[in-house]
Length: 547
Ligand code: F6P
Image 1 (cartoon, rainbow, N blue to C red):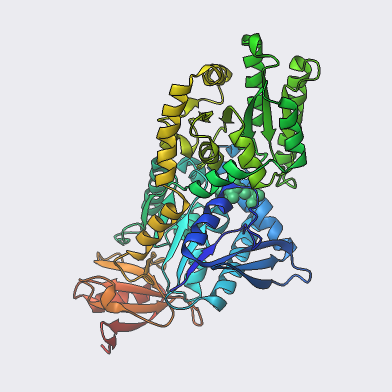
Image 2: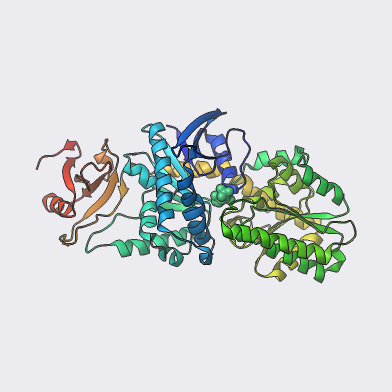
């Protein structure tokens, strides 16, 4: 049994992470468990087709795909990042939905599914990551894949009301229901998911058809490679030339307040600059004693909202410097390129405050990395937005703030900068023990064990019958499950299952849908499935059954 991890971004074989928390977490998890990591290569295919390559690095095989540019655009810059991303971050005002983008999104998910089908063995476990790939399990089931498939959402789960406003909310719900196990960062995300699914199921329930219970879902807060990051921070020098020049200028007389975020409207970077300006106005004694160092690599720049956010960020930065820059000493620094991880780790260790203030964030692994990077004898203080997943785990030690309230950031900055060594150590110990216990390997281990531990046959999944308009509405006790194309493990469906009816929605349809009865009324049941438009065959626990 191998573990297949699938995500849009892959930290390809160099071991160098692409910006973003997801690859950091997955890389740690895969290093601990070994397996295959499948994702986008970062390149467009030249002739419109898909090409893939595989590179082995340690115990991980990296399979990357070049994707056709015309489809990639609608998939990545379209549906993933102009519909799902803003919805998941409470910005429905930024949603730009188009049915063409949704088709591209499904198409690219289908390409990932094709690639996986070529490589998967029957016992392999599949773990799919993030909002780019929600429909992938459904696409795999449609291709007859019977493996257990799990999904982890790295972002917050969208407000169910917002999701319901999407014309394709039903397809999203059914895609989510194609998984054996879904993982979320926080209890709040899990609750939102459950609300969305139960409302969606209510709207899809037809007559007296009972759907099976919803897929299993739980909270699995993602972790980092804590020990590895700590030792990197302890040993590393800042080799990034821009960052090292900044820290050289600060010397030991100016305390660094550090932030590292992908430049995104969810991260509230302009608001952070303004809050820092307010701090200096209210506490002028800190002028020339502190410097805000913001690392903010630019990405997704083909999307208008990101170009705008980059402009807002630069303008807030200019305003801050115009108002507070004195003499030669820097008041704030903004780096819009990515920085290598060892340099970042070393800079975190040298910074008195980690300032992590997004409006909304699934987890925010930078918060955890800042904690991991600290010197146990003289740790810095984490100032953390309450609206991050990390706040749920780190509330015992971090100073929690509301990024919309500049004054709450101002108060926390002052408290952080004036905090005595004893309190800093006490707060840090609480946080480090959490992130040591729940590191990347533990996170992955928990998820994988839970996925493996599923009692029911993994290749059987819930689906609903789509009845023809005049289908009978008789009450029947059955479960409807989507199955693999070839092998049936009927006895594993459920202890009470008596018969399995296998139907095809259309001749030549690769996917078969199984309808399981657990009562004796199989004739009536069969009739019902047929009247829903399926051609059928009947299987019993030991194979085909003739009626
Ligand atoms: O979960 C969020 C995520 O998928 C993370 O990988 C990272 O924060 C970011 O989005 C990556 O963004 P992109 O792949 O668009 O650069």
